[in-house]
Image (cartoon, rainbow, N blue to C red; front, side):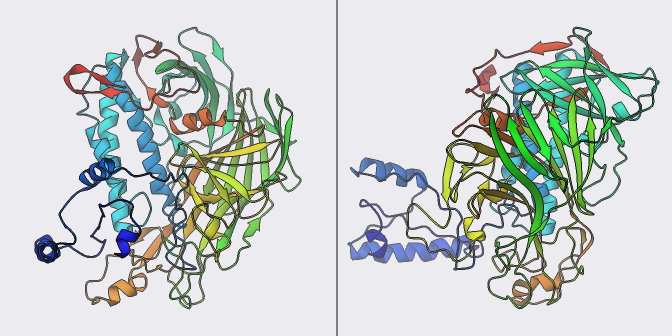
Length: 620
């Protein structure tokens, strides 16, 4: 009767199942059949086994005036101080690896279609990505050993797909090539080995159905020039300081300290080939003194503290005062907070005011291709602010970690950290912001308010955090600032007026008792789980019996910042570009320096998927 009172129509769904129960199927089904027998014998209700499809068909056949819900249920909470807004960021390296692998699959399906191949070679990546959509995988709420296994599956699948794409490229006339999988940490043997007079062919494949310009950065040891292999024209380029060549745990990856950067103009659904040639000149970097970045579209100034200070969008004349800095919330996760402490699921800071790092040492470097300000905030937070020659957005690449803790082993006095990037502006948004719904429509977020129910706020920060999968924006009557992300994060533009913040990294010392039974403390090593600890002690105190050791996790990510008039939607095409990064390939020989397999589509139309289907057909 209680369920019927909350359900429209005559068909009522009763779900059963649980993360930690109903593992014995025979026992469960026998018990349910007995229960259903006596319910049906009573005659007032007919009970039967069903599935979501049958239930939906039955409801569809009923004549019901359905209400329409346009908001969502985020953030979920299971108590006054138990907001599940921490998992929006938990395990950021795995989240980013999943996102990057998804983009590789997006391109690989296209390339297989253009090559007339089947899907068999890319199926392993499909399956690995499907497994990583599990509600304890991409959420970051699995145990550490399981998380490593998720990443291992992705790595193996990526290796297989790389071989498949290489074979497909061979049919395009791109022969005997190889990849540089560690370009994100400034390592690539194909370009680092170049000495005076040596050259390397570089193919840049664009999976979008739009021509676009992208900045390509390749680690080199000698000064290099870049040319278009199709036209023979020199491409404006410049030497810049590379991002630190380190692994997720701070080990050297053998990369170069300098890189050549250039802007590549790419055809839709195709590639263009460039030639990078080392000269006999030593590497020199043009270091500027005035921290101002400016191109045809934007002007960005910095304060005396080394922080972004103001952005001007030249076409519209929109100006925003914005201070971007990093900081952290101290987690309420010590042993004294037994019930509602932080963990992989829960975000519960000790106070609503973060500790901010509001001064950075800066280095300015300017070339024809890019202008950059390198910021160092402390020993574990740095950022590169880049403005490319023709870009209408600002690129922010952060390197965060290892997040410091007092001791590797939790003690009653220690506490973890939730690290944030904050944008403090003069935009009068009045507590209203917008975040994307799985990369699609934007959801309006209002501070301390939910559209569908009477909401009473009990956590001023955590209760106003929302998932940011693609973008977040704040606006007033005249201007709009949009932040695009390359991986899923938690964030908010509704905690404080005129501010956006996004959580980048988390390191916690205790478990939140929501099912992981292990602290969210990502380190290079972790001991095996002790077998001698009896249940339920292993479940309740699992974080005290698991020993994390070695270097803490370092995460690197890229965000794009776009300024425009209020209501401007041009950032959407930028968000697609940030997701669908070009593939960079190094062939020994090239038959066709430039090819395009797709016609240019209007800017508001995207190819969501193009892939081989059965019987030689294509799925578009």
